[in-house]
Structure formats: structure tokens, C-alpha cells
Image (cartoon, rainbow, N blue to C red; front, top):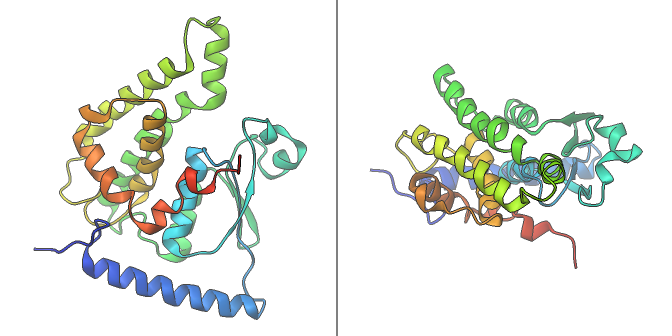
Length: 246
């Protein structure tokens, strides 16, 4: 029998993970003082699901970073400054290790490979499953609910389609497909290790609540999310913790 902390992680994993991050942070601060570490800069929007994923990942890794907000509501994403960083006119962009990276899932895999994060399992079947769950969220649910897509639909419909109705329909449809895929025993999407799938799930559930999607029909998803959300590194990435001051 495995014992779990209040945040849902195995006690042994909590101790090991916290110790590793504590040591890593100390080493990073020492190295930074000697000028050996390049600053990590995250260009993000506080409500962006893709940016939210990276805040979670960086926090889980214990990597200090600086946020440079890009206000999607104000159109900052299509300014020359952001287009120079991200030619697609999107967020996030991560400046790390002397390079600029875009596309959140690619960045998650980069961070996993560079830091041994465990966001992807070591076995090929496990990696395939975690990618499948991640893509079901990030490539099926999120794109159709993207701000520029929903705004265009509402405009084309002449107001016959509302943003809320569009979001509720497609988020619920996507979660209905994801729910029966979460069959592996354990507290998280792929057992007892937080993976890329969990990092994708938390922002999606935030958006589901934002658009008043009824989550009662998704008990497995809801239970996993409830275990993930209180974990300090994940809680610290919540949009309400980083939103601009009113």
C-alpha cells in the first residue's frame, strides 16, 4: 500500500521531489551569483492555457523565471515585439538556455529532456499514452476554444452563437471523450507520477469552470484535478495568482 500526502503525491515522492528541488534551487542561486545561469523568461498571458502549462512545469522543476506579460485581450500578441519572438503571434514563448522556444507541448518535452522531469514516462508505451492524453486536450479541445476562433465564430454568426455556448459545447464534448481514456489506476492521469497529461489537464479544467461547464458528468477527471490543484507548484501557477492588478 502506498501512502499519499494531502496534495495527492506519494509520501516518498513528496520527500524526494522536495529534496531535489531544494538542492536544485540552491545550486541555481549559487550558479546565478557566479554568472553561470541565463535568466529564464516566459512571455505569457495570465489566462492562456498554453502559458499556464509552462508556469506549472517550471514551478514543478523549481526553475526560477521572469514573466513578461503579453495581453491577448489588448492585441499585444500581434505587435512587432511579440512577432519577433513568436512569428505565429501567439503565447507562450520561453527564452531559456540561450534559445527561444514556442509551442507549449514542444517546450514541455524540451524541459523534460533537459531536466529529467518525468513529464513523459521512460517506457515507449507509457510515453505514447501520456502524449495521447495530452494531445486529446491540447490539440482537440483547446484549439477550437482559442480566443481568436471563438471571436471569429461569434462574429460570423451575427451573435446567433455566443462565446459561452461555443465554449460549453466543445469543452464538454472534449472532456466526454477524455473521461473514458483515464483508466490507469493511480491518483493522476498516468498513475502516481505527474506527467505532461496532468500539466495539460489542470488549465483545461480551469477553463471549464470559467465557462460554467458542468463537471459532474466527469467524475474521474474531476477527482484527478482535485488532487493536482492543491499541489503548491501547481497552485502557484493558477491564473488568479498571476493576473494583472485591477
